[in-house]
Image (cartoon, rainbow over all chains, first blue to last red; front, top):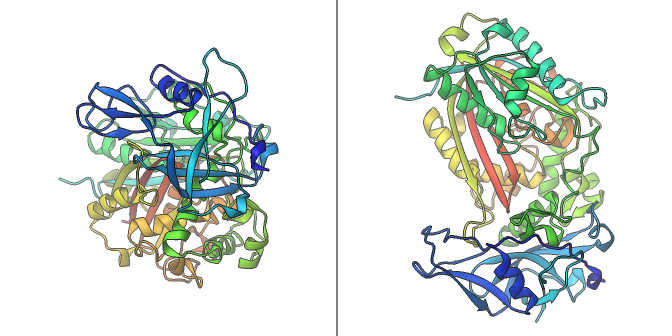
Length: 140
Length: 386
């Protein structure tokens, strides 16, 4: 079952730690530029639209829709090798940006483009000092 | 003032090997350099511009290649934008030659991807120490997976069918059957493609390129000097480069770099689509070819499936694509762009024997580097007989 999907520890930098720590608290944290209002993902140290330094963070709804997906039957690297078939997807979250993620909690054959989904956090494997989690999505 | 037509490709060589466990990458590059220089009748001492890229060349890569060849060029370019790098090297070389920064440019590629058992397509997705990769690595994204996400979206938006993608693999294999050096030469059918196992839905094994060793070399000089050399010059009529990425997080995943680079290259060449006799297009996957043909404007977005069906991109069809058998059947050592240039040149010289596109005068080359739907580069050339 897709529930078996395990995730390697995500490498974080000071630019991206806010996102991963948010996931650790059960929150999907996105960035918004204080200067031009642009919402962006993945996070970075400046606004990609206006190059302004006034980056703020906010907690997004964690809800969105499957923009596109693929059922992956071959990956030669663990832990994904033994998780095949698993679902990779771009999920468009209600606040705008898309997140590359996995769809879990349903049979891969039931996933459809446009399917409403909500975030579901999982503890990654390996170790780091921070309290991080990885965002997957499940049908809502 | 236009660059169009000022510079020509005069020497090419594609390494015949598809598996070379006994060779190093720079050795393959050097063997290709020797053959491409012999092809045009120039010698090593004529080379004053050096261009190189490979999967393993790092920060001093092109300098190390210069050392290996014992060359001291006055112009260096180690641009590495993935598999399209060598297509971009051609336009960079044309600009450098036209600007007087070098006279004879040598572009090199070598790879032992197959011998090193590199899992190029399905080996990504493990842990990574790179914070930028952290937004894909924990989810098991593979190269095939990224293209599969795009293919699925195209099918949803336009009703494109797996049978139509399979047509691309079938036409390409029919070309490989005519190429004695191609790795896979046995004919296949649409049914064979659909019956091959799914790698990442909707892409089957036979929708994916092969993995081989290999290498190539390309030599350029001014069109004026080219006319005194051994082979008919093939002029660089137009060129363009572009990138597509996630930007702030919401790009159109079906809008690929070829739309921008192709428009510039065709505009510079002053050539219409009808004047293009054939294409060499990076075929990492069948969907790559379909999307590229649409983005280059050979058909409208969404019409790619019909465009590639019924043998229209096979030899003898309306627009033959990848007459050498492409990366799907001939060779794919990880960064295939140099072979797109080499095959286009050989077609325009009329030296391709049974796989010759009859009366080929103008060809279009498009290389893709990276992954469509994630982060990729595109480089387009329009090449023409002198």
